[in-house]
Image (cartoon, rainbow, N blue to C red; front, top):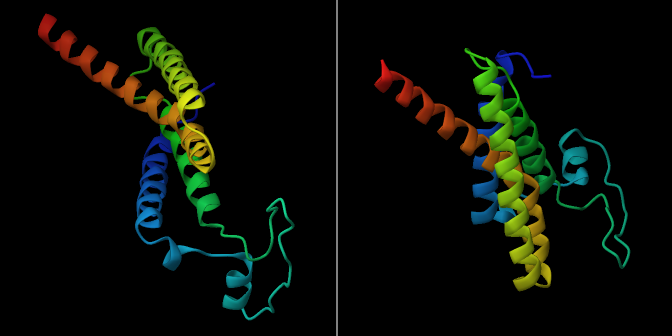
Length: 157
């Protein structure tokens, strides 16, 4: 079941906001970090004094920016990838299905390669990127295939 067509425009905006925030966070992470205590201080509430345990579980001083970026990327990607198009027919549904399969195959192959060749903390970054790559690859494959098929239909006419 696909989302209504209006979600697609909102999804592009949300996805773009997540991408911009992600790029900025990679460039200037210190000035973009935000925590629960920062939000509480903004509204005049007191700080919560907590400490992360040795496993690094959540504390009130944990950085929430990566959570926000991830939320924007997932919600925007789902809105863009799974909302109706102007011309939804069986052919578009077939392209959507094949693009989804292709994105899962590509992501799985990339994940296997990373499992073999990436270790340590870098692997955590790879896994974080893997969360979004299926959606991104799906969106790219789907729209490229739709674009090429529209061009080939115009050439046939």
